[in-house]
Image (spheres, rainbow, N blue to C red):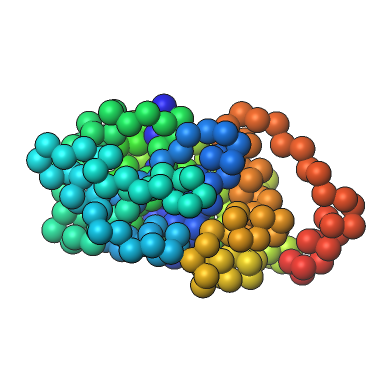
Length: 251
Ligand SMILES: Nc1ncnc2c1ncn2[C@@H]1O[C@H](COP(=O)(O)OP(=O)(O)OP(=O)(O)O)[C@@H](O)[C@H]1O
Ligand SMILES: [Mg+2]
């Protein structure tokens, strides 16, 4: 079982969007996937998926309860443990250690944890249950600098930082490109998700972009990243004119 946490070192760069859609893309590849909203600061996985949970991670962490007590199955088949806002708990390392222990009873190929924004104790503590870390950043130096800081503290915590996913990328000539970023950050770029209105629309209708706009540029890049993580070679099945259309759409 692989346990991954999605972090960023910065708020609003696309952690939850990536967590949910990467989870779905991996599930669609045949993996058993569970998403855990480990963001006690600003939990919003359920909002991205359009449901309001009666029970949350907090209920599952209490006493002898199991994580499965708060497990939801989305209509698409994805399993989710929704979050709950509790600022008292947010930086409590013992809570995350308990989560890690309880996660061992789950049987999945991938557990993906969404985590709080920033570089504070809450963001650090939320990495405790995971073995592997994915860092998200927009392709701008301030965002990349914070992603780098997040990767540093993850490494200090003996986590394996798999790489960085660039989100909201454009084709602007001044934007740092993946080769530059790999050189500066010394980290693999696992994906480059474009700025795509389909993502905003999918969030508005609370239906992840991989489901609602499967052929959008963002969905295709997220699916590519899922192939990379799952070790399944990617074959682009689009026609040349579809690829050209996508590139033109990003200009
Ligand atoms: N590829 C994209 N193209 C266009 N808009 C995007 C893209 N990715 C994310 N967004 C926009 O950015 C917003 C923030 O994304 P998201 O909630 O995933 O960020 P976050 O890092 O989880 O935020 P927080 O730090 O608050 O948890 C989304 O609501 C959406 O409007
Ligand atoms: Mg979020």
